[in-house]
Length: 255
Length: 71
Image (cartoon, rainbow over all chains, first blue to last red):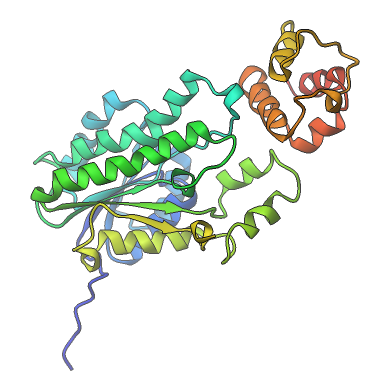
């Protein structure tokens, strides 16, 4: 019987994943490994990275890096890619939430959130297109924003700024990098059950989770729900997709 | 916590407040103000408060005691 080529396979591909030490980043790393990819796992939390690696390939590289410090990203990445081999793409999952009503929003905190959630994506892309880093064919960049980059929510102005900016970055880079055969897409997740969500929930009353559930016709998501969409966007199954924002949100933005 | 009353007065948009003042009697007291207090207290004093704890603290002085107890 003729073997059918699997367009979702990531066999022999190499990717860099930020935010790999926990939550959606950890699940994505595990699922990408299962799909055959080799990974550079990046996070500021070393212990978390070690835990993630236990469920990925032993040959995957770990890189402890503060992505909010843009001045060190290129140097650190070049060094690890020299050992690991050239990349087919990256996923920028690292991010912080910032729940703060307008009265309390401050510039320093906004810059801090912007550095990690947003500007790091640009610096990563800048490094990725370097000939020493990019393998030159079928490149794919996946950025992770949020439903709050798409729709409004009180007490979220700083976070929304950082996430909605990723949509502009996605479209702009999709055009700029198309000639290099690099696709750039973005996923805007709804609320997913992670530690980040648990710590945010602690600020609210006991009905908060119930309210959140009601915002999602399909209920709250799991990290795997996001990870599978990342597999699609990295793989050749999405070879004609670029500059797109995918709402993976259990129906949140359909309401 | 020497500027506590000044900081909370600013969040509540009041000229002056006293420790015995009841939180929910302030005109600006709403869920966004409670969130502002949570964020303010976290940034300034490194404490993690919940909405329930803040509502249970009842007065400005009670809120001060709540934050001080977590520092």
